[in-house]
Image 1: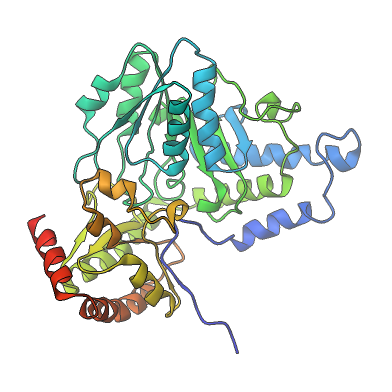
Image 2: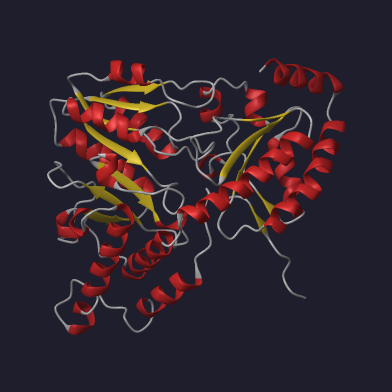
Length: 398
């Protein structure tokens, strides 16, 4: 019996490895398995493919290939950016970030705070946007780095990174952005953004898990997080993960092929899903600003429903979605992103994130919509009337 089709609405968590990417990496798991640091041909012939991949990912973000450091993931890239800024500027001991960052940034800042560094966690508005005046007021003479995500992984809300970078540049402050969710969905040009450091992860753009990059603008002071051999020009020790680096390069080429028109089609499909839910299922609301945001993401709260129960019922129908960041799944606490936006714990726990991909079809959306209203109604019917009344009143007050 053939496997049942999976209806996947969790692309912000991860994406499938594209067939072209798998084909590109396989030879480097089989016949081309040498160590690129070795002096003989088996190793030396791997240097070229690594550099080709470096050029491909650099082209994706509008950078020079010499500004790319390959890492193991977005989390490592983010940690490297933060620690490097502090270690190369020992007289500066302050970090500015937001209350809605991915756990890679949030928990790294918390760990640095425990070591005596000062961290300002900027609040956001109810729609998940940032107060520019408050941001400017947070910058201090001892601010070593600003680390703010470009696109929120839970709501899709975009921050004005180019404006923030200009404010930082005027004060001689380094700025890093977590752009993990952006490739293929928005035009990405580090020179237009004006950032000093930028993090990406291959598995968000149809590459494999286990490889990422850190962009380091020329002239930016830098100290490696992982110290070892001479790999990555001394910027990241450890034998290069050749198959995955090659795969990242191919995935970057595929992401570059997405046009503004294809991004508009993706946004239109997202809007169809969002509008149908909001119109056909009572007591629902979108979390976060309608624009500007990623073209593939919608975060919707369902009054009187526990997200985990809803996700389990969707899973029985081979529908994959999320209650928030994949890195916090299983946590008892409500999403820190949603609570920072002013949602109650109950509202946050009743939220589902649907994140689409270019592989998502209108038929996939129709399948989801054919089941979702019934499931929500069943869950509400099974819930105490008093709980529903409280949740409904809270939703109506927004």
